[in-house]
Amino acid sequence: MPAHIAKPVLLALFAFCSAGAIAQLAIPYGLPVSIENAKKAAAAAVAEAVKNNWSMAVAIVDPGGNLIYYEKMDNTQLGSAKVAVDKARSAALFKRPTKALQDALATGGAGLRVMSLQGAVPVEGGLPLIMDGKIVGAIGLSGDSSEHDGQCAKAGADALK
Image (cartoon, rainbow, N blue to C red; front, side, top):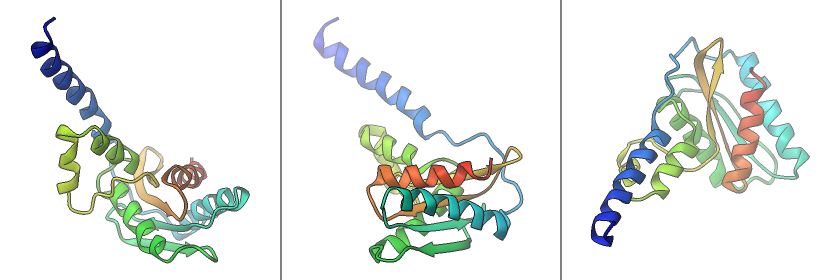
């Protein structure tokens, strides 16, 4: 295939494949996570951070992005306080992990549209919380690398399965 044809075809194929990376979860919203379950998820996330000697802020929101529970470990950078809440809200409102937004943005091209979505945080560390097949809220972590934030968020989300 000639280069002048191959490049547009590859770009179109790449854009098509990356569209799935930002597709919303087909899971319906449910009733908001209870304070007890919010604390349970936060405790598991903090335990993962402590185990790895990371300082983190953790936020739990309901499906509408309203804060249910928040905790910041000692010595966590102050900017992480707001970022944790923003990651949780983004995961709840867009029904997807914030890493999916990060990955879409990294593809460039059509993925750059993520930057125009109000409230979207394209940085790993936010995950929807799913119970009984429904999104009951989301968890957001911030304080270390985005990969570590995501690892702790997963520990918190997994505590509710």
